Structures are given as C-alpha cells and as structure tokens.
Image 1 (tube, rainbow, N blue to C red):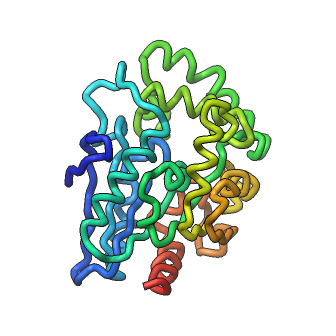
Image 2 (image 1 turned 135 degrees about the vertical axis):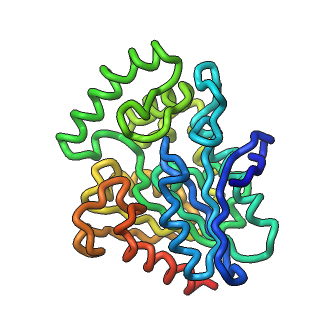
Amino acid sequence: MIKFPATDGYALSGILYAPNVLPKANVLVACATGVPQAFYRRFAEYLTQFGYQVLTFDYRGVAASAPQKLKGFEISYLDWGKYDVSGAIQYLKQNDIPLFMIGHSYGGQSLGLTSNHEHVKMMISFGTGTGWSGYMPTKEKIKVKIIWNIVFPPLVALTGYLPWSKFNMGADLPKGVYSEWRKWCKHPTYFFADTQLRSELLFKFSQVKTPIIGVSSLDDDWALPNSRYSFMQHYSSSAKQFINISPEDVGMQHIGHMGYFRKDATKIWDKIAQKFDQLI
C-alpha cells in the first residue's frame, strides 16, 4: 500500500503493481463509483506480465481512502476526478514513461474533470455512460427507480451516508456523492444538465484531446451503447472509437457492469495490452 496526495493535498491510498522488468509504461486504473481498488487486483497483476506498471487507488471517502466515520464527511462527486485522479496522474508522471488510463464507469467520466489530462496518452473506458435509467432495459429501469426513490433516501437520512455495502454493491459512499449522483442520474445528459455546472463542464471536457476507446458490453444494463454515446459526445475534441462486445465474444457467460474486471475476463485484458503495445 502506498500513500500519495490528491492535488488539494488529501491523502489517498493506492497499490502500485510493478512488473519484474523495467516498466515500459504506467497504467492508471480509475475505479467505478463505490468499487474498492481491491476489485481490480487481478487485472492489475495480469497487466504486469506485459511489462506495465499499474496503479490502483481508492477515491476519498471510499475504502482505504475513507475517514473513520463517513457521516459528516463532505465532498462533491466531482472531487474524485478533479483532485484524486489528477493527483494519481501527477504521481505517475514522476517518471518519464507513457501513461495510459483505464476508466471503469465513473472512471471514464473522470478524465474530463482532471487538471492534467494532457499527460494521458490514451484512455480505454468500460461501462461508462450517463447513469440515466431511460437508457436501461425495463426491468433494470424499475429496479433503479425503486432504489433511488424509495430505498436509499430514508437510509441516507438515517445514517448520514449511503450504506452501499449493505446491498453487496460496493463500499459505502459519502452523502455528497450520493446526493449529486442521484440528482444527475435523473437526466439523459447527466451532470451536463446541471445549469450551475454545464458551461464549466462543457469547456473542461472540450479541452481533453486524449484518444478514447469506449467499450460497452451488450449485457451491461447500466451503460448500454446509447448511454455511452450520450456521455462520450462531450469529449468533443478527442478521437473516439466505440466497441460493443458480447460475453460470447470474449469467452464469458456474463459481463454486465462489473465483469470487465472479473477473473474470467482475461481475453479482454489481452486486448487492452495489445492496444497499449501498439502505442509505445
């Protein structure tokens, strides 16, 4: 476990997975919302076999980067990208080798929030979309509306944070993250619909010139292609490639929103390493 500072000085906890040879590039893994860095361990270890050094870390308020008590811990959902991912980029740029980024769900959104995205040579995102239930299949849409509008509000009011772990859905989340996430997921264009943030965010995302590959599995009900397109259009200056996959394409029975990084996803990981190799 290592410690490094976010760009505002907050101490973040991460793990640096080093290959047995001199690293040919760094890979930064930007987690999905509420997903602890430990979930990406197998993926990170696998990439080291190809000579890549991989950094995983927990955002502030999550898992190893959380305070002892989440109640009263005030942050914005945007802080993860604005300060934490920016800090991780800064940490990895201490050596002079290429830097690639893997963005899972929110992680793929975070690049546009960073202050130093120009250091990232390429980002491959998995399951990144807007979170709007209108892009989801009917069954998932109903489920999401129930948890957002009926289940979560009284729980958060009672505890002062989102007890995400009680549902086996990941790590507990600060109230600020929950509140903004819930608000923005009500709109097809997500946080770009927020009138107080729209102009600033559109400008920030338009400044990103990092090439992006956006991958969506056709059984990922949370981030199907239409949801991905809706979000990724805001990386308006980036060269973008969109790839749709099915579980059978990569020898898996199910991918969903999390399967891109489960232990049986090695065929996906092989393609990631091949793509990065082409750019070195």
